[in-house]
Image (cartoon, rainbow, N blue to C red; front, top):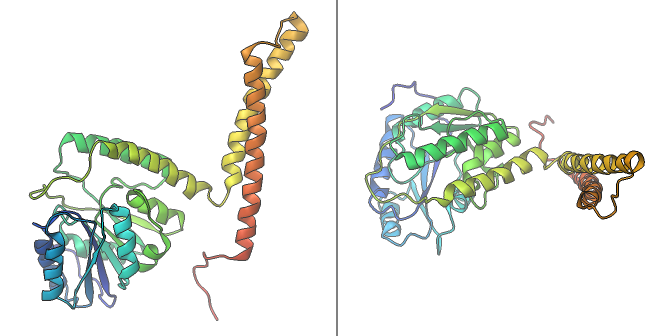
Length: 320
C-alpha cells in the first residue's frame, strides 16, 4: 500500500479498462483494485471492462467477475477490435463516477498508485497522468517512446514526460469534453489542456509484462507522429484557423513574390529571358497558392466566428 495520505472519498470512482486478449490478468487486476478500494475505505466504485474484440477467453473472465461482484463490475463488449481510443470513449460514456481512472489490463500498471493519483487531483488538477520513470521494456520500445514524448512536448507545450502511459486519473468533466477516435488516446492530456483543464503528472511504478504479448508493433511510432500533427493543428488552430492557413499563405506568397521580383529585376537590368524558366512558373504557383490559403483562412475564420456567436460551451461557472 502506498504511503500517501488518504484523501477525502466523498466522490465516486470509476475505472475504465480496455481489454484485448488479457484472459490471464483480468481477474487478478480486479482483485488488486478491489483491495486498494478497501484499504482507502471506498465502497462507491465501479470497474468497467471494455472487451475490444478479444479472441481468447477475456470476455468469459469479465462475465465471471460481473457475476461474482455485480455491485462493482460492468462489462462492455465490441464485436471486433476497434482500438484503445474507441474502447476508452465507450467506457467514458457508460461510467458515472466523479473521478475516472484508466489503466491497462496487463498488470504492468500498479493499482497501489491509486491514492497518489487521488492526492494529486486534490491539489487542483483535472487530469493526472502517470510517468513510467523506470520502464521494464526493451530498448526497441523505450527509445522510440523517448523521441515521441520529446516531440509531443515541443509541439504541444504540455510538459509531460510520458504521454503513452495508460494509467491516468480524470475528473468526470474531462472525459465528457474530450472526444477520442483513431489513435488519439495517447494525446488525451494535450486535448484536455487545449480545453483549459489543468494537467499534472506523477511517477508510477511499472512492472514487467508476465502474461500475453505487447499489442503494439513498429507502425505505432509512425501513426503516433501523424496523430501528433493532427492533434497539434486541431488543438492550437481549431478556434483560429486564419492563423494556420493565413500564416502558410503569407509564407508561400512571400516566397513566390520574391522569386518573381528577382526575375523581374534580372529582366530589367540584365535582359535575361524569364518566360520559359521553371523558376518563373514556380513563383506564379507559390503566389497563387498563397492567395488561395489566405482566402481559405478567412472563410474558415468567418465560419468559426459565426459558430461562436451561436453557442459557447466554455463557461466555467455561472451564478444565478
